[in-house]
Image (tube, rainbow, N blue to C red; front, side):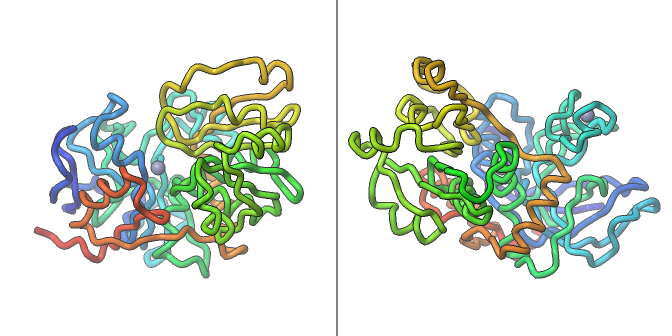
Length: 349
Ligand SMILES: [Zn+2]
Ligand SMILES: [Zn+2]
């Protein structure tokens, strides 16, 4: 299937129109027209090869919402016209212990990423959602529940599940004391989801200027991390802190905020952190953990939860040709809180 999208040809080239082929449908594949695609910070990292594993050309995009246009001969879950979504992965081995548990993101053989990855059967590069059409095996497509706004649902597929999964892993519910560091795409979803689960939510910020935003998103309060007195008072007051900051930073101020057996879970930064003092970890049996996206079953659960609770990201809609400018704004954290590309704006060259 001939299609088109936007690709980076190298770590230094801007995204530009790119025509390419999607594979012919395998028996268990669905084809979809992409209607909306969220812009994740990792799209920018991978387009620029910040992590050193980028394969070019790269068509980013792993927060994808669209409609089924065609189904393979053995597809049972979807029909033409269904609203579907695709997140960060499009395949896994399907037979290891993690896959069998529905934790395909932790596949022992490595999951196949939606872009910047290789198809398990052909070895061809995978291309993401900054494109008009997508082909995916039905097991890795999600159903967009009735009533969830398609235009705003896209960021749930990465920012949503990346923050939902640790909330579920650490059993957050009514009365849980949850802290959120960083109020970007992931952070604002962490606040909404934790509040939706009934938790007591605190946004941790270096400046008091984000207080109104934090409260508007559903947080109970803002704690200014540069206010030594307030930080001392807040010691041992959290069960879970979700750290969404996507760059190297210092965790030392935050670990003492955890209660005994509390966990600080990193979901943003992939790479080194500042030197860590382990004293508060040993003294309070506190943990620093990491968490990726969730499995397919959990992602579907998250979408259904968001539909039921009417939880949606705050989005700024852009046109496809504005992508390079959007990347610049993303880099300076100038977005509230997630860019979404309206793919109707993408026309064949
Ligand atoms: Zn992402
Ligand atoms: Zn597996």
